[in-house]
Image 1 (cartoon, helix red, strand yellow):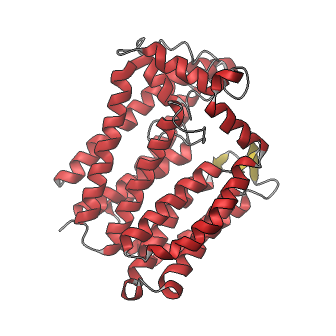
Image 2 (cartoon, one colour):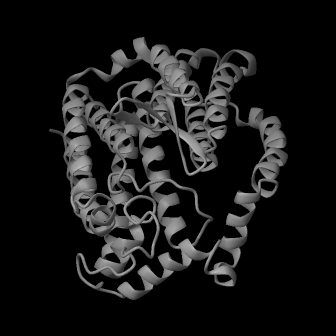
Length: 361
């Protein structure tokens, strides 16, 4: 195994192992209260982890270049899944959002694999259009329209955080592929008033913004979650209270095992623990970029870059939310937060990066 592949595998393994430990630590009390089984979420997390390992074993051996032949099919599957979430009896609503599909005992979140499938499609499309990559109508507009359709479907769920993150990743891929970024100016011109409406004219999002700007003004409502996150991070100090000793996970901090697991890490493992997580993600992104640079073909370069930026950006957003740097977005911390679909497809992303790394020049 080549050096970059070894480094990536070790880094991802440490993050995943940390996630397994912290999912149990942060969810055990809540799981016991709700299901009378403290290991309920841990068991489900481990099941998804095993599924991810099986799929990862396939994708490591599968020649990533053959994904180009299936890029459109994968994209259509993801679009179909995003549409199905709105169908009664198939789509499952939770917290006012329709982001999940449930078929019997099987449940998954389509937006989690849509990001990967869209990256595969863009990498294939922009590689094929390299000859006229600067042309607006032939190389820029068609993939941009496809990206817009996918982002709009996610936005309608509604899921503004995932939509913005995915659009940012896609724009980055366009830039690296050599597209003329001046073509984005009309999109930006249209997007600014649309974002204003989506954020400031939607009551629950406006309350989030107000809670972000001054969480202490309403600690029992809009500022409750972020204040509890501050208390978790602050009480951990430098070395933490000790693994399993969090107080905020005792029904004070909502979503402690999903969106705010970074805060529990800070409380139990302290500043040392949180800096360790930041360091691991920094190493992951650095190695991912190296794999992209050294890839043998444009498709591999764009695919590796898209996967790396997607995982890195989600990590940055999650940690920024936990520390109050940005308003709450509802994005899990990759490899660490509880969430089956996200874990499976993040690990598949790692498998594809390892695949690309092993075929480096």
